[in-house]
Length: 263
Length: 288
Image 1 (cartoon, rainbow over the protein chains, first blue to last red):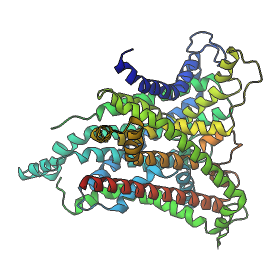
Image 2 (image 1 turned 135 degrees about the vertical axis):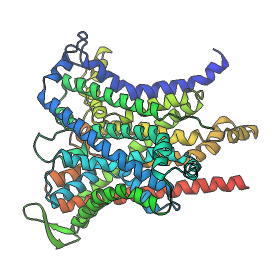
Image 3 (image 1 turned 60 degrees about the horizontal axis):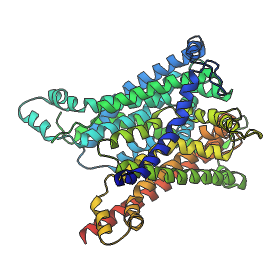
């Protein structure tokens, strides 16, 4: 064993153990979703029958559709509001600690507290709850995350090129679309994808703001009620699909927003 | 777009309005409920009272609060103990592989919380994978009941929040000036002493950030105790849930929520102070 290898060994063992801890439970789920018998006790051959079963489950299909509707609307609204908020906050001359706290709060407030607050708020105003109230609620934390991603990009943004553009006679509007927006676009899309993932996965706030009845159940709500009835092979398949979608959106977000080294 | 004085305010306005209308206002409304009496048929009776806050301090509920705090603290400490070596190992990996390792350490954090918790039900239940493995290894006794225990709840919390702690500690470790450690070695300190006297104190802000994050999210957690604790473990999050959805005592639920938020704000302030203190110290050292 070489000295260099011996020096690296402890680090590698630590990484192996930690990544094992993080990924083993997920790997087991994914494997079981392809197990023909569906039982965790024995492997009885590769099969996609549990994925087929999902396609025939109308509750799950409706929940998936609801989730998509909520996530798309929440993402669109929060991407616009979050980007504007980021621009507003980064171009202020003086930092306002109140504004900082307001933009930070949605990321740290316990979701159960926000959930009961929204339930109280909507019932006090006698608003009929459904998918629209979930959208309104999801925009709260989505926009905070979009804002933080876009702000990180703006920190490296050289505002002198905006002034240069203005000096050369471009209007404020032209300057925004030709200079600021293209530079920010990767961060805006990355923030939007993050918002989409968060919205697709969010359970507690949706649960409290969906109103009663099955009509506005989202996928996480559906998964929660299935888990409470016990383990079924269908959940394994559904879980694998949901994780696949989130992981793809995240990889895409990361790739779009990768550091482009500017001198 | 030119950036004069009014533009920034206009740009921020829609987002701020959304947050004020749908986050600040609802939170203030629910907080105000905590000062009223519960209606006979649920709902709220608008008579001023401090009874709800007194009930939060009632031994029965204070016990649940303390129990949640203990579970949350255990989860924080365990998460730090696992995350620190992991973050350290990542920061020691070749420059090119560090972002990749970090990305895959954080990836599970962004996947569905329910699913990650459910994975542990699959592993830990009586017919689950762990019991099966034990049987294959020759264990013949009763299957172990690992699910619906405090250990299962803590495992679930550590598992779910570990990626964030790795990220928090790594971000401090990676900004550390390696010359400090070299200097310590040159002055004759061994690796252990260098770590304890130089590296660890300088990375405490990251440890604190990660620890506070796990604590805050764990103490108000609702899903993990409900699924892995099987409802046998009441934590503050579940208590709030019950007041709103089953017991129909919104004012008391509101008071519990307020206590939760107060705990969170205190911890975040302490953490911010600690971080400011640590960075101030570092600036002082640099000047000397």
